[in-house]
Image (tube, rainbow, N blue to C red; front, top):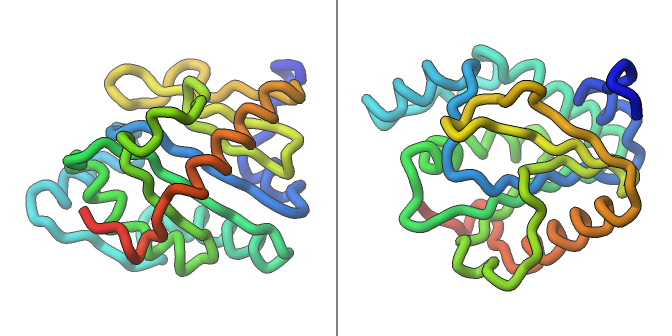
Length: 177
């Protein structure tokens, strides 16, 4: 895949026929579109769960479209315990993801010690292409923010890591923070 042909997430998901899986392994993100909501949550302990607010409509619509086409979307989060404020915020907002059709599970990091995990969070589409999400040490998007691979060995590593995490993880409804 050349730099000139880097697909957007929406394009990758639109071309997905069966499955899109997301493995998240960071305990803190600080991406610009979440900062205000996260800071509000830290100050008040409350979260706006209106699916029409801010950037949610675009994301949730993309998820609903994929799920309605039969794509199974699964998200697994490997988290340190005790969890960070960011993970508390993320846990509180997860019902929006689930309402759109995503399946979400959580795995405490101590239970993943013997799983070979890639070095970055990723999305894997139909076991054919992986999109790695690259972040700075402060939790914001790096430059460039994404790397892609269609290498069968990389795809096999990501698929294996995701399934190992998924098998051990607990459903969102059963995980408390």
